[in-house]
Length: 442
Image (cartoon, rainbow, N blue to C red; front, side):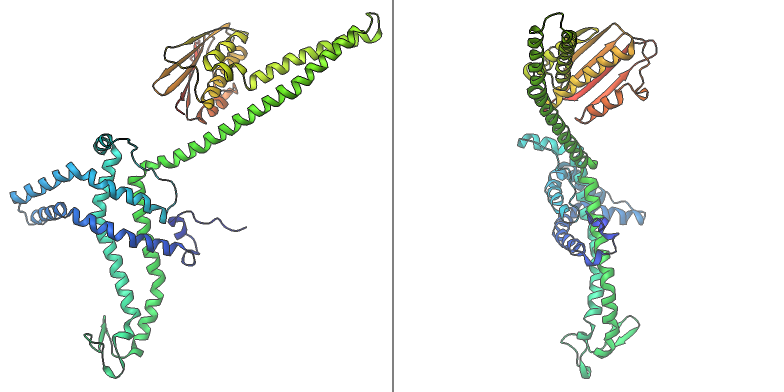
């Protein structure tokens, strides 16, 4: 079975086929495209870096010059004033470049609709200040790291072209002497440079790994500071989970239609035919009693199937909305259930929210009827901001425990699938309160 292909550069570096894959070239392209951003960042932040470098130099000598400290303070104040604005394009560019070595989703940054809100977000959002930290690293640490890599590339290049630095008969290239010093060794002929060429060739894989490591370090720093702490991947998981819930709801509605339009219709027809057949038989016929029992069972089965269809996809929920469906649920419950709908609660919400809220109320009331031993319950529907709240309260003895198989664990999973949460309060002696909070935005 073929091994899974690496999804990003860090995974590729751990693969034995790294050098034979496309990843070294992607790492090289990532590093090369970073050089302009590193250079521009270093130039823009030169007043800050130079003044603070001067402060450090003077501090090591035990001297503190007021003008130097004032200059460093002014440079830092200026950076604090406009740094988040300057960092924005660097962060945007880096988010786009990350796809070269790491295609995983990343937070696109604050979403704002107007220029005023954009400027406000540049100072109010924590992510904007993380972008400024990234810019500082880009202007200070990155030049050192990329400089070391450039020096390694220079050394390997010298080894590879060493035969060109010396010519036959001691005639050197213009501007370069015929004798080239390689550390403690001197090379005067191309033949003597061959071992250095072989050494340079042997160091090419090392150079490829060094380039990959630098690209990974750069990309990991960018993802940590610009990626919102992994929220993009969490949102992607949430979107995937929501799609599964939507698919489940669509399949459930299809089953409801098949039962309603197929099985229920045919059962109704059969019940009518049994009733007509019974009318054609005299009361003292041997088949009359059996036909009466079959007719009664068919009618009971119709009621059971109707309740089953209603439980799969309540027609009231589809036609009238969540408040009406909860009132209908309370009317059909064996308990004495009161339903309270707070002001501000709308009749309609996204289908996944309505279905989950109804399922939560139905499951909670079912638990009260089966396990709580209470004669009554109360359902409350409220909305706080963008959160829809469903509460089911009973005055039973309490002590509800999800670990005892009361369906609360499955209910919590169903609620979590649409980005909500379930809260339970059930002290010994009661009361028991099940609270479901659902994000109600589309």
